[in-house]
Length: 254
Image 1 (cartoon, rainbow, N blue to C red):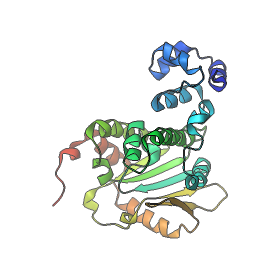
Image 2: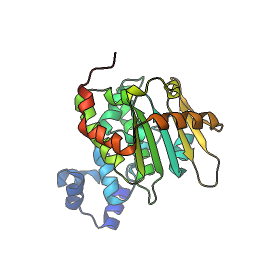
Image 3: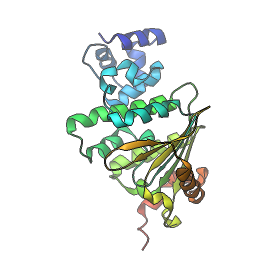
Image 4: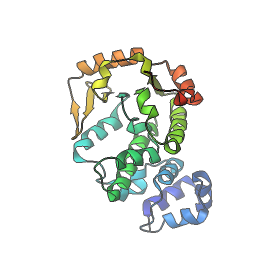
């Protein structure tokens, strides 16, 4: 029996029927989750964990354990402790804002095998829960290049854009779109994140083709951040852009 799940349901006063209603599945499905080896779809895992006030890792530790590369684990711990996260992405959407389907598509495009992708998607969703679903969520500020919003199949991107709107309307989430008309900018050198932790120095995270790394000298990142943030759209305009979708049908500038 999945004892952590059973205990969480009992503590939250949830039955298979009430949990199924909140997750959006049949009660027979949630009943099976209590049995050993029965693991829900990533989206349902996340919804069930939120309904029960737990993390995915607490309820299904086997799908999260060792699913992130060793070089990423130090940053994952920093991410969980941060009071403020500032992230810039020029080519794909930030992992913290990805839907399961978008994450699956992105991870499948790389060197991971089909049997590995599922675990990495689950770990990514667990990271989201650790940042957004804690009692006092971190202030998260994202600047996303418009090019990242244009990349992907419509059946994946339209739900993903809906999810971005939902997240951007949260009080402690700030999303800013950097429009193509902004032209060249220093952020084109690559994605980065700056983490601010109470009573500690800021830390940065840089990603490349081989691996990611934590950096302590964040002064250069702050300079780039100030630039990309200044040329990005305000929060309200970014949300309006994501809702209208008119720009999706516009031709690329010549």
